[in-house]
Image (cartoon, rainbow over all chains, first blue to last red):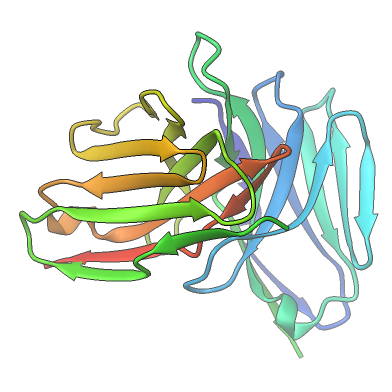
Length: 117
Length: 113
């Protein structure tokens, strides 16, 4: 299927610093790009999403930017706190199959974020 | 946000047995649900798309005869792992779509001995 690439795979920052995670996608028909936070052994939790008619979206300390021409989107976390430590996944809504089988989320490989006090 | 429940949360079974996992959308109707599998320290891999009232659509490499999916109603999809083997041990997570947003169930941790 279509790929979603995510970088970096691990990221360590000091408390209060910013963290940036970047993703690229290949399906030009993708229009929806959510970010999920997953703590160990738990379900992925949606933290922010962006649709293709918007270039940037912000929710308190979290922001996401989208460049549809370049097919990449990024997650920005400012003023990081130890509780931000988790695995973050980007995803892109991707066409399934050739015969209009609908859309499903394809996930990046994840970024393990560690915020040290 | 919308709530998705999943049952059971944890299963330990012997090799060769079948395991059924239920996924429910509690406060909305979902014509489409998704089943993912996640191995330790890896990403979520889509196994299949479950469509209410019709056959599931499986991703390449996923055996449809081994992973049986039934979407009998707008709020319930089930995944049955038939003749489970130790390599099927994984974290299985379902997801349901509400207004373009996908919400995830809490997951089922399957351990096959």
